[in-house]
Amino acid sequence: MLELHGVSAGYGRSMVLHDVSITIPTGGAVAIMGHNGAGKTTLLRVAVGLLPVKQGTVLIDGEDVTKLRPNGRVKRGLGYVPQGQQCFGQMTTLENLQLITTTTSEVDGVLDTFPALTPLLSRRAGLLSGGQRQQLAIARTLLTKPQILILDEPTEGIQPNVVEEIEGVITSLTQRGDLSVLLVEQHVGFALRATDSYYVLESGRITSHGEGGPGAIDDVRAAMAV
Image (cartoon, rainbow, N blue to C red; front, side, top):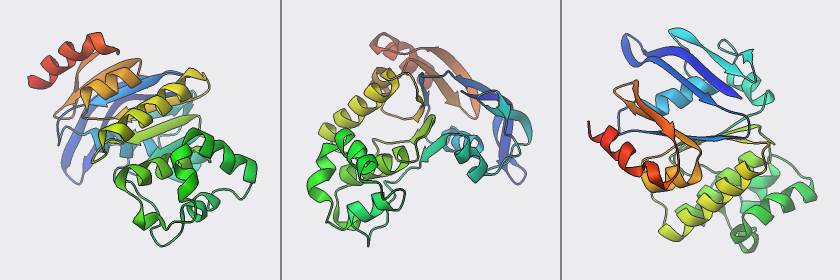
């Protein structure tokens, strides 16, 4: 569903990614892991079209979108939840959702996925906890009906019980078979439980790749320790 082939990218003369290739299969979930400064967020910016590539190609469902702007990629099914639990703080939880759709059934659908938001619909989003804002950010993106959901550090600064809820949501979404997930995460256990396969990024290069699951934790930690 989403492929990066031989991608190199950076800022000005400073290269961050070097010949990176990854594949996110249709209905699959893939984790990108690595230390701070490894190039994870830069990779996502390339995937969504916020940063042009120096070389390489980006494909969505087999179509070359390398030169396509972010809004064009959204129209082709890409949904992006950036780092930082972003929302419109002066608006209520419900108003944040209604920015995407005013259809009651669609709002009710994402509230079924995130029931913790239901009693908070009239509360200003800026007054929500970090975990609640993260759930709102994901719910709002799901209302765009993406085929590819990209999540950048969804557990950063989130309390453990909400991390478990987000993990459960990602697992249930990918089990539907019609949504692909690309997850950038430093929480190794969470990332491997929530995805089918992983890539380890180090200094802008892929240094390890394999199947996900709890059994891969030692391999990933060893790769990240290099």
